[in-house]
Amino acid sequence: MSIINERIQPGRLTLSNLIAELKARTYFIDNSFQRRLVWVEKQKVRLIETILMGYPMPEFYLWQQPVDAETGMQQHSVVDGQQRMSSIFQFVSNEWELKSKYLDNKEAEYTDKSWSDLPNECKQKIWNYVVNVRTIPSDIDRDEITKLFKRLNETDKSLNPQEIRNSEFNGLFIKASEEVANNPIFKKWDIFSDNEKRRMVDVTFGSSLLIYQRSGISNDTPSNINKVYDLYNDVYEKKDEDLRCTFEILEFIDSLFYDHETVAKFFSSIVHFYTLFVVIDYLKAQKIDLANIAPKLINFIEIYQSAETSTSPLIFEYKMASQENTRSKKSRERRVESLFDWILS
Image (cartoon, rainbow, N blue to C red; front, side, top):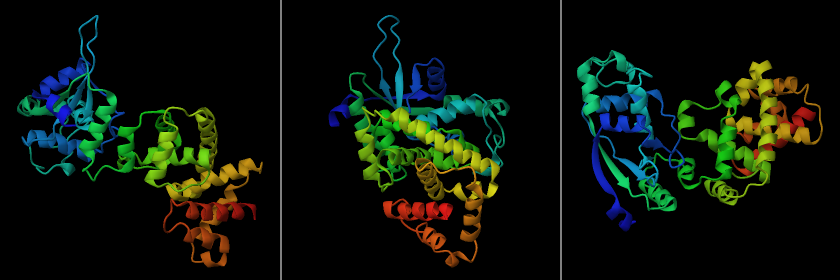
C-alpha cells in the first residue's frame, strides 16, 4: 500500500475543470467501486451549500485508464467521490434546487434557487471552487484499486457490509442481486426508502431472495452473504433460473398488493415480505391453488394487529418470531411455518 501511495499524484482542479472533464467523458463514474448513486435530497443540497460557503470537502480519487492507441485519449475512472461528483454535475445541469429547509443559512441569496436562478456571483463561486484530486496510475490493477478503496473506507463506520461488498465483488451474484433489487415492485410499493436504497439495503434483500433459491432459508449474517458472493462471483450456473423463479413470485405478490391494500401495507415490511415470498414458493411447489389466498392473508393480518393474537397459536408464534433476530434461520422458519399452516388451515 505504501508503494501505491508513493505513486499517487496529488492535484487540484476547479469545479469548472471537473465538470468539463465529465462532459467530455474523460472522467466517468464506475459504481462497481462504490455505493450506489442514490444520495437523498438533503445531502445534495448541503454539499452545494458547503461549496458556496467556501468550506473544504474530501478529496476525489481517480484511476487512469490505458491511453487509447488511436486517439491518444485517456479516461479516468472515479474511484472515490462518485456521489459528490454526480451531485455537483446534476445541480449545474439544473436538476434540482437548494431548498431552504435543508440549508443552514436560510436567508442566503441562493435559498430555494436552482442553478438557472442563481446570481452570477454564486455561479462563479461554484465554478471557481477548488477540489483536491489524487490520481492513481493506470498500471496499478483493479484488484489493488479494490483493496485501496476498501482500506480508504475501512474506518468509515457509515459504510455498511453491503457497501463494502459492492467495492469488493463485481461478479455474477451481485449483478443478479441488483437485478432483483431493480424489480418494479419495490419502487411501486415503497418497500425501500431513498436512504435505504442509497445504503444498498435493497440489494442486500435481493441477495437474500437469491440465497433462498440456492440454499433455502438461511441466516443472513454478513459472513454468510460474503461466502455466497464469493462462491457465485465467477460461476453462477443457475442465475437465469433463480432470477426467473424470483421474478415469478414477485409478480404474484405484486398482484396481491395491487388488489388488497391491507396485504400491501403489512407485507411491505421486509421481515414480512421475505416470509410471504418463501410461503408463496412453498405453495407453488406443492401445486396449491393461489387464487384465493388473499382472504386468508387479510384475516391473518387482522388478528395479528388486534388484541386477540393469543387466540391463535399460529399467529402468536409468528408474532414472537417477528420481534427479534428476524433474519436468523430459526426466526424465519418459525414465521414461514406459521403463515404456511395458517393459509392451509
